[in-house]
Image 1 (spheres, rainbow, N blue to C red):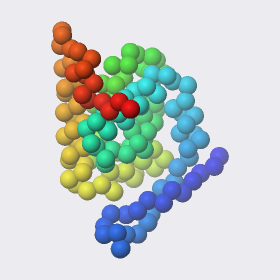
Image 2: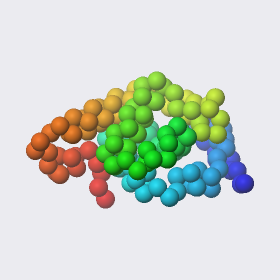
Image 3: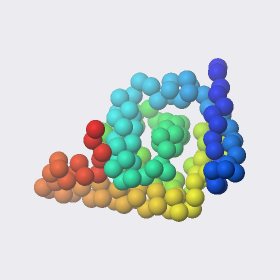
Length: 157
């Protein structure tokens, strides 16, 4: 197994910024996420939603980590659910993680990935994730929901 040390800047003014390193194993992470089409589609939808809502603090690795934890928690059949169920669940999970200000690093659950964000960024992201979750959840009961209305929540290339 190959492990990598990824340099991560610590918060603070640019000229005094130090670097820490995050250990990761992209091959194992890829293998865990591989082979599930619904998971891949929901991952892309969450990234698109993040971009549409302007959540720059919601890093792709945060989404990946959330999926890695859910793969550990959920049984394999969960990922065969319809896309809207998986999307709703993952969006709610991310919102809760940000509201609790706690997203444990997959390879060391004692480390909180959100520690490198400012309090304002965590709160802003928590608010936007919960707002998106509540709005999309209500759409299930909207009889005349249009594609155009739904599209406002996603950035389409």
